[in-house]
Length: 117
Length: 111
Image (cartoon, rainbow over all chains, first blue to last red; front, side):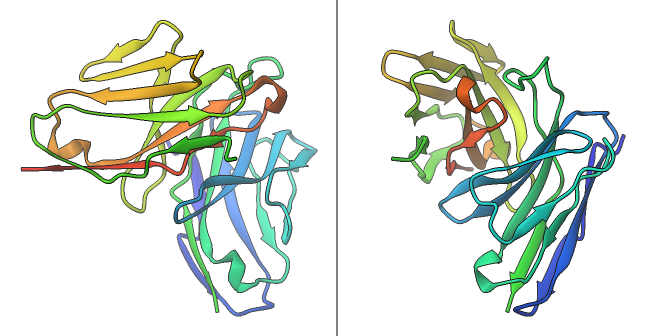
């Protein structure tokens, strides 16, 4: 039972490089999301998707792109890495109840620890 | 003002003690409330949902106070394995797709 699989676990980038963080879930969840977690800040939503072909911005979307070509996959792209993007990134998925996720559990990937130098 | 605020702690308690802490939220229209647990450097995992009437799950009790806009978590008979960071999560109907996370309360249980 894989749940949410997130890769890589660790990554070091140089300023200006680009990369893609992979996220896949096998629970047929409609809703997928990306968060970053910084000390003292809690998890902040970067982008989210409520289904294949549909994406939207969260509260800190700048510098990141996403796509949702399939229900299972939701990759996060860093376009031109900056030191401010050094963080721990989590992908999560949830089942939607109609159009809301009000009472459903969010399942998280194991996280990616990204350092930009 | 942050949407969800928590006392960061740390709360250092001996085994067997009771520890309780709160989480305040700013949006009075918030509808759903949860406690997640996060172990050091790992992903958050759902501990329990918080219902209007309050609810228990073993040694854990969660309460919701809508009038004062806070939720609480109480851990009885603390175990070493309860050492973790506890994240408060709130969902407001106008932000249907956004889980608002608190920064977490760290609990350390000592032998």
